[in-house]
Length: 205
Image (cartoon, rainbow, N blue to C red; front, side, top):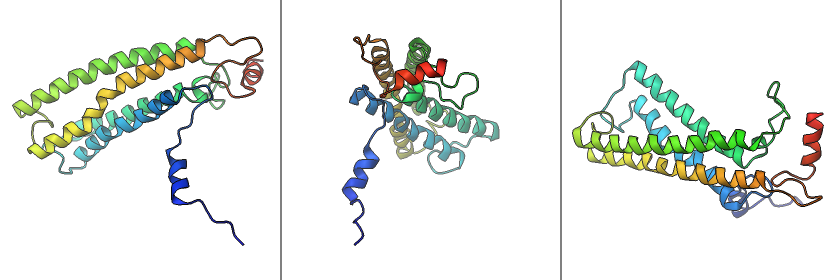
């Protein structure tokens, strides 16, 4: 008699699980996995703008469309890098990367760019929201050339970006604390799976 497959509840639970290293706080893992999702609405809004969907009456030219699509791709790529702060490839360089594969990532090599990125994001999106507000008032740019409903949808898609910087900074702080914590005698470094210390040594050998 065939065994019954997983029910809807089990499937939903599996989909909702976040993948992270042992020793990563649950809140940090959830925050890191949230970052790509909070960036996604604004990226999709820009794609919709280029495709001519009715998200705004503004119509970008060819060059501007390429820039807008590139911005969406780069934004999502940078957002996905946040996962490295809770995943194994944020502590050991994946072996498929030439020259560096298998080497341990120094904590500051990840912490410094991430912290500077968080500061830059806070400045960029703080200024951007100020500009969007000015555009809504003056009717200039994609944020000011649409109906009230379109303008409200724009703000709804971009508002989550205000969470990007604080989430990244919090996850970075948790990563630094975990990577620099001194294990007691006989204890492997925090965040590494069982046998990770030996594999690191073998990778350097």
